[in-house]
Length: 61
Image (cartoon, rainbow, N blue to C red; front, side):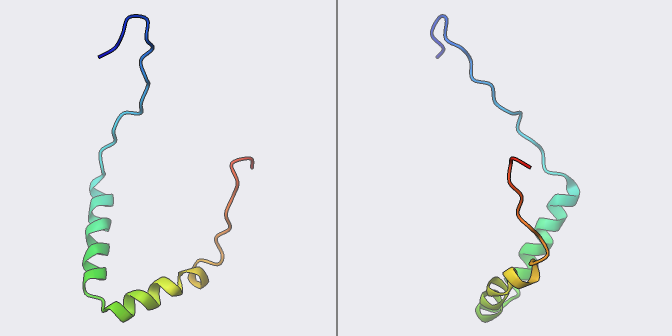
């Protein structure tokens, strides 16, 4: 309960997932569920080389 004179905290409105994002998530979950443990490990270990073209940016740029 808010005390008199106390400021209210502003929060972002909760978003709603789009149908496209939901379909993409479900497809990815299905794909991963069909993978063996070895395939999952191999994929996780090669992510750095597959996304090498992506460069991190700082908040200052």
